[in-house]
Image (cartoon, rainbow, N blue to C red; front, top):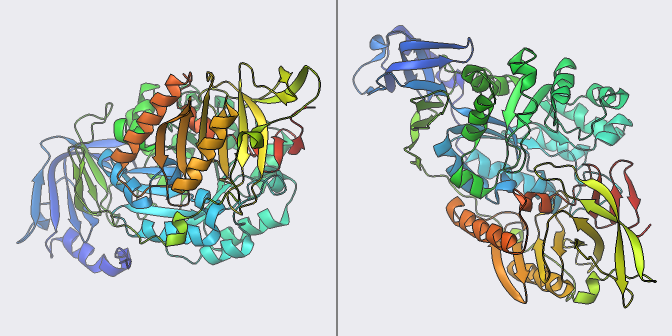
Length: 594
């Protein structure tokens, strides 16, 4: 489907001026609104707005001079009119949905702009995959901007991806119409150590006048952090405490505080504003990763803004962090993020600024949702056949492929320790029994990374603690940040083999097996990451998966997110890749049995 660009301000400036002056009629006038001006942190009672060609033409106390034949007039009866919400950092693939279905899911929640980093599909299909995501994004009735992924692989030498991204790819992508910058620079050791490839990608982005995203997943705020900031990243979302937020803002970065499905980092960082009283202009609210289930049941950016308010943030400041701060950061303050002349008429009608019920949503001047229902079409791309055939195992896997062999009666093993509601893991050591020459995961679980891009048939095995699984189960997923091979976690090697083969059969997704039976299956046929089915359908299958995980003994909040991140070899402390167990504190491979 061909993309029709939204008219630029230059295209319609004459009409906007004419409407504001009263010479031309507006398309839409909204009256008796309490207009929230995030640009000044004011609420203007009884104001009116006039819209033409999807942009605000007049914002003020009386728009009667903008009304003419054909003008649609709507009365808000004293309800609030606020800017559409902007998600400053997120991954559409984490919702297990395509850009079209993700948009359809978030529009009723008031999200009208998203700044997306499709580095998940970049690891599977490279620059071509990014272009497919970008092209479908441009078809949507809301603003879905793309950041060119920077790190595939995220840690060169420690993992093998389906494709690699380099400076030439970044330079190419900077010319695409929907690209707004470089995606999160996860290879922070590379930047700190002066990697010419990483610095070349950053330079290409800055030369294009676009924004460099950051990812500094380390608690070290000493010289290493300062070196990373000097390398060019303009924002950072991996902070987990007030000191992280303060350090980032003091160094001229935007501190992005997130509330996703599994990340609860707003409460611990927003105190930099609510208690320390720092200037809020450099803080942005984002989601990073949200499951379809969260989108369907709890919301999206509206959920995150409500949470910030519940944590003591002034509602108007919270709204700034989800609108104008984000737009300004990406150089789009003339386009988005505020109710003001010339900007895209993206807005929300709500009756309360604290609880933020989303009663109606407008995108580019058109009502696109009301009462929780999306009113517009979200067009799909025609995804090529090979994007649905991305799981290549190379052989039939058996229980023997998941054995870790050793001599003696007991061994000490390096074990990945899962931390609830946080991305970092713990590097643990545990004594495990050996039976018939095979190490048994008594009381914990095994984890395996199954290569799925090049059909090598290779399986890397290790151990993981913290899920609480009982005997006889296994869960496999082709969502395995960021290289997206296949992660299998289980307490039964036969079930691990069957779960892995099942995903090879259906073309990717998530499956849980217990006692010889498949208990749940979420099909994600596009790149093994996404479904083009509606969010409600995907959410229902995710609910079944969560119920199966609970029945298998896991009580962690959003444990699936923890499962899918166990191969993310840029977040401390211990991870698994197709090359082995990775100690992210030193960025070196480490043996499972030291």
